[in-house]
Image (cartoon, rainbow, N blue to C red; front, top):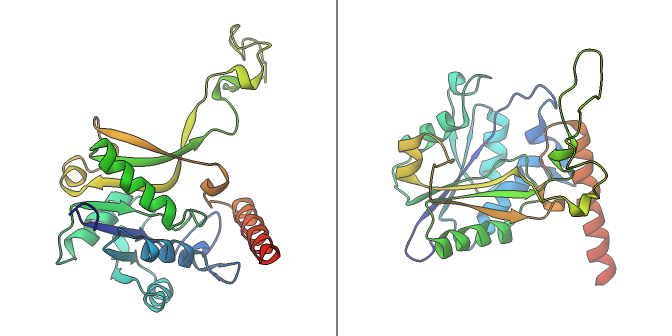
Length: 237
């Protein structure tokens, strides 16, 4: 609870994954990938309950052992065409207690921790917002990108005003990093999305903690970062 408002964290975790099979239970530095997100939610000063929604018995069992509550998701809500909102609404409908805000924590963001969650919730209060979504600065400016025709011609690839400009001279762009989504429950159910049309603000995270695991290369990057942090902590002691 924060400022007399209650927060329910929902972690949607399907058993299937095409690009990185069984990614939610893969061992990342000594614990299943999903464990990093569950622990972050449980350590938050403001999250009142953490629920994992999954169709997979192994994921549900792991989640229970770590300390999260669980909701068994029906197969039709775990298909490739089912939306995240479908899973969230199912979890809300199957939970007796009502909460002022829903916090979506995707298990593919293992470097997001309780500090980030709490800061995002505090920003929600500061802005008197209905929704907060985490972002990070883009690695490369989208002004340096474009589509290509079939013949690969780069004629007109960059706009004239971008040519010969240094990256530091270009306007900053931000992207969704998938780590934290917070929305007032009634607004979420009404709009069926965390992306409200108004009174929504960005919580800015650094790129290092914004690793979103979709493919094997993302997993390896997260592994390197976590191992480096462990070595640094061990050296500093």
